[in-house]
Each structure stands twice: as structure tokens, then as C-alpha cells.
Length: 186
Figure: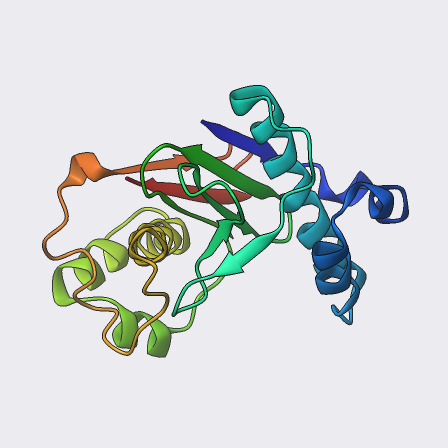
């Protein structure tokens, strides 16, 4: 199940503080800028909403982290989730099997980043796209969702991430207003 909040501009961080676990409140308050605090809190509240609606869980979830930082919910190993955020939106996915999501704002990219992270066929598709920035971000979110699914996280060889992945294993969505793209890997 997917939960999305794309109205971060109007998210009331101060009002969210009592709704956060001590762990998440501490994490949110470590962010230097208000944007980071807002997205951290908003993503957690989406997870809480999903846990309540999908599983009837009303207590504030506490996280534990795997070897590469992938979070899981203490006391609920049967619930898989993943969260992501960008400037405009936060995203949370819940499932009974491993899942990975990534959401990114559509923005200009640097050629050096494209050549460092994309393989030759992906570069060709980006360069020949009517909207190269959108195509780059689509590939990036797909790669990051796959890496978050595995719990691996960003790695040195980003070019090969999608090499052995079935296209059916990844869903990609562009926001109706074209501000962001998100991908889900299962």
C-alpha cells in the first residue's frame, strides 16, 4: 500500500512533534533546516497512518536498522516498509514482503552524474528524450528503489543496478503537475 503527502509546504512541524516517537522526534530535530525536519516528521506520520489503516497498529513505531541502514519496526518483523522524501513530497510503502521506494524532485542534472550513474543505453535514452531531466530522475528513482528493496543502499557501481531486474518489478509514477517522480520496487 502506498501513502503520499505532496503538500509539505503546509505541513505543521510543531504540531507533529507530539505525534512522533521519541526516537523519530530526536532524528527530526537533528536536521539543520526546516525542510528536513518537516519531511522526516511527515514520512513518519505517513507510516503511522499506514500501520493504523492496514494493520490496526496505533502505537508509535520504533525502528531498528539493518547492516546498511534499512529500517524495520521493532516487534513487527512481518511488516515491511520503506519511506522516501524530496522537497515537495514524502512517500511511504507498506507490504508483507520487502519493498523499496524512492521519490525525487524533477530538476536539472549534471552530465558528470549521468555518466557516473547510468549505463550506455540509459544515457542514450536520457539524451534522446523530449524531457531529459525527467528521464534521468525516472532512472535514478528506479535504481534507488531497487537498492532500498535489497537494503543495500547507494553503491559505487550504479550503472548495473537495473541490469537483471524485470521491468514488471518496478512501478514508476510522475506527479500530475510534473514536480516529482516516484518508483516502487518489489
